[in-house]
Image (cartoon, rainbow, N blue to C red; front, side, top):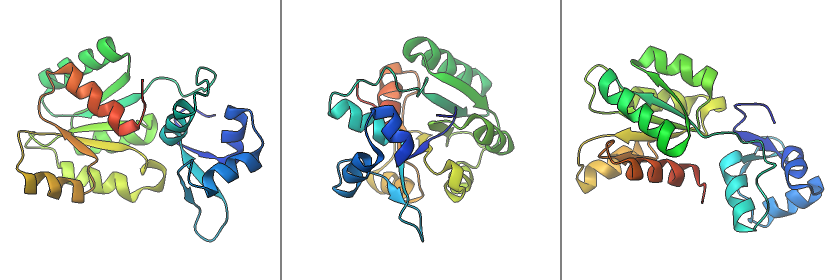
Length: 192
């Protein structure tokens, strides 16, 4: 599996799980393994995070699975806050983490780095978090990225509006390492 590949074919999954491609197709067709079909084709695609969830649920060994470290892109114009968050994610969870300090950098780095999770600050005045979210969602090769907003406390309606805009979740306190790591693991559906 190529580095940065977030979506797998049934053939890729078959090699990783040491089964025939037809077995993977059966798992997909009966709903055990989630993914999507290519429009106008019968070809199936399975997100890496879904495969890991499936393998762990069925007690399949994942150590031969070449997923590598979870890749996180932190987008925040406040270098002090972003540096502290990067340090936390690298030391406490052993994630591979990069930072971007504006919308332009976030797009370029997301293309090259192909993160599993994008943490974007809604608190930064010079970052258009909603624009970043729309841009990521519009690109087919980046659509599996989970986008988590860094924000202050939200009302119920504000939380619902954020999720409707395409965000996968939100974090209130980036100083709470357990909360941040928990949200990232929840978003990527990796169960430890």
